[in-house]
Length: 135
Image (tube, rainbow, N blue to C red; front, side):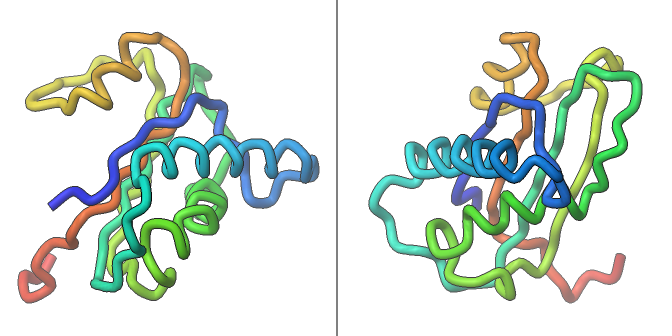
């Protein structure tokens, strides 16, 4: 089950960014999008999976995926879920927008972000896959 699905206009800002004001502004944009979608619901308390995909428009980027997700998790903690320890699975990707993509069953939220033609970050919080299945 998907609990939260949002997109945030990019560029994404690294947790390690030297410009702390820029990082704070990025976190505020993520917070605003999450609050708009989440509403007044209470934070979840069960195990969860987070999906975070940065769709960028550059040939390559130096942003590490762990530095991509950290500010996002900081924002979602206490708003969407109680604590980071609930995240038992994470899917992290960096994908160039001009990459030929095969699309089947795309969500309306993700589809809308693609139609705008600008870089963005896709964030989804959902129930995790069955951990009894060995990868």
